[in-house]
Length: 359
Image 1 (tube, rainbow, N blue to C red):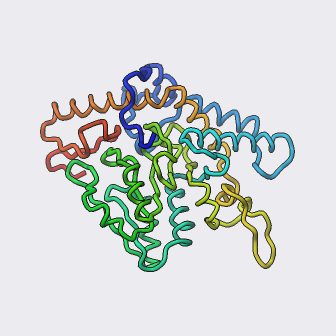
Image 2: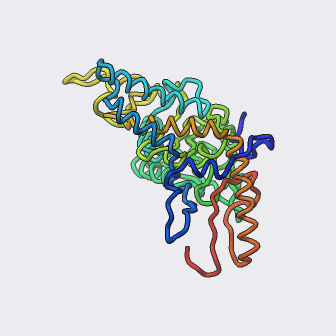
Image 3: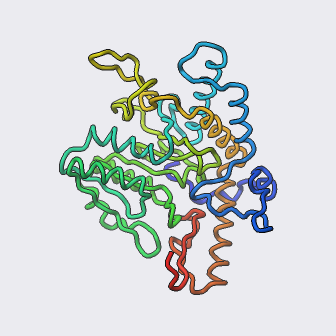
């Protein structure tokens, strides 16, 4: 597939609302005498019991550092950590998960890794960065920092009143560009962007494509290589996993050309008084003790989502979004809803203004 699958097939297996809800312990709580209705998953999702159990099992039976010891539980911990990497890679269609998936603290760190490691190696004064006006700060601020250091130009793809990218001047904006940063799905507008189309245009112009998948990977069928992007960043805590871990997928040939992002243990093969030899990828970018229990939890989250089926997840969320948009517009005619109303090109995020109330 050459695009994020925004519209799921109608044959997807339906999701059992109540059955899924029972999988999430926190949702059994009541607040002010009412069951929790959690509407903040765009910020951080809740975790199913399977994720909590996997992390507890690791802590109780396998807790040890990875890639260091040769005793039994250390080797088992390493196997579980690398199995988690493989599971995450398969989930996003990585052809070589063992080398192309870098574990990070979150999507923000993953995007900073690209800006600092790739950017500092490839961008010179006067070079052009192209971003969209709907980017998360994590895909803006690192480029601003780099632009200030290197005297780079940042150009912006505008957003129209419907919350869609204005692509009429795309060729002009990309002319001479070295990098395009684009969110797959807006965390404010819910807009699902035409990433494959943008990636094709960017590559034609000679630019590398850095995609923010923090909102899209948890909700859409994702095939990173087929999208045409060169880097894809996302976080575990938005896809039913724990906080403290995210991932960066990068094309192997690009990752192999990059210097380390952070220095310390594990990211080196050899250290001497006169220098060091960096490790192979992906460990070159994973300095220090990694979030091991969190990686195990992320793998469990991936397996849980596989069990639901991502086409079914998309179909279910689209039905809920259609219902919510219609209900809001019907009951509150003065409500201004931001982003596309067509749910084939939007996710479940709904932002709105009401009359003169400041957001």
